[in-house]
Length: 356
Image (cartoon, rainbow, N blue to C red; front, side):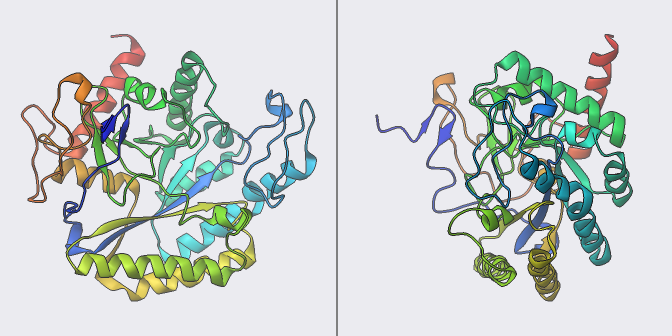
């Protein structure tokens, strides 16, 4: 049909001239580390599921056991919450590295000590959904209830609602349900770009901060992936160096590093992450190490769309166009800053919850 924008897809994007994000201090790369905290929220008959977990463990190629426990799989996940998280926590705290935690609601409920450590560290905690399951065939009513429930869990256990959302295994309705829930600055259920971008499918501009399955420790437990810590470290360093060079040539980007407590939390793999930490320090001001919330606020404050982003032609709007690189382009009636937007969203959520 010749369409470049169709459904929720935009195969054209920014094209040959991506916008300059104008990162703080003229950084060439915005670098974000994501710790996925999923252990205790995965599939398990003890959690009321009809089968065991089969994904992202050292049992590569595992199959789910219908109506049965998989005790080896359970203990591999338990390593992440019992030991792996704390190793990563020590590493990030010792180096004063900020990060974002993609936290599964049920997993947070099962480990108050982890919640306390995350809160004390001041890390951003984005929602990773209520369960770490595949939502492809979950009905919208159930998924919506899960999204709302995990927001309440964050507020109760961490004292703050999440402003970011990553389902991880979404379906075609997930983004709509996130927008309908309200209160989110961004979602990360996309791998489509090296920069944030806007989506207009559901009315107001909705920010997408893309995630990665490529610069991700999950490749330790997938065929053809990383074999050693050295492989992991080299891939991370090569990616960052290439992106810094692109930034110096006039096209700054964003780099995400995906981590899992049960995977890179193992000592032999953590050594590769430590090596990358040391490399990042040598890059100086070329790299802005930040949270996804900071990236989202920067994009809201400096690149709020005026005819930009991914717009659905079916709704009568013009096709997507690159966001202006000239700094702030807020539209009439939009918040003056992302901080004000967060405050407004929090007020709206409070009003809706008390019924007033």
